[in-house]
Length: 297
Image: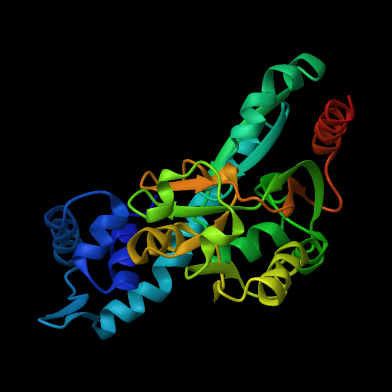
């Protein structure tokens, strides 16, 4: 398997700073520097130019960076393939999980699911929530991951070439820093957002969000809409650090410990459920039929 220090190397290269990489890894900057030094010594190459303005990759660092992501991805896939081969006689449902796509709802439903189809076993497969991974995983559901839990709409399903089963309609809420002036409230009126920057996913991502955007522009132009391109932990960090307000759902309550997700007095919601391949395996079909029957009852 690959050297785990490669993941730290990629994180440092992306962040351009030992301190920022340490924050993302939840370890100290000293520990990050030690890992990079060990990697450079082990490979006998210099990966970073260190200056008072920050870090830049050397030519050797650029070369390794281009290959390291492929190495890590390939090794993870190889482990998954090995596990699948070992369990080929068992009905295994592979659930993709990330901070933005937690599998908590399936954990809660699992006792009932297990009663109705005891032959199916769960396998949780964590993945990094990046735009590249989202495209790759959702476009190839059924290959290494069978099901991902998340919010969606018809536009996203068509774009990502996958299918979805709605479990619930999640009210669109707002996330704020626990230090924000609105954090003391347990429910927000729309007027509470006047004068605030409200971060919304860009137009075209979801028509449910676009309906909210249009309503704000037409009736509540005292709210400043700020577009962004992708939901990941960095956006939650940005919300906490900038004191802006982030569109969110209650399903993301545990993504960031310093944010509070608060419902709003509007009627906007978004589908939440299971994303799967348009041509699911027999195991996935069985699982989906059980979940659908549970939702119908």
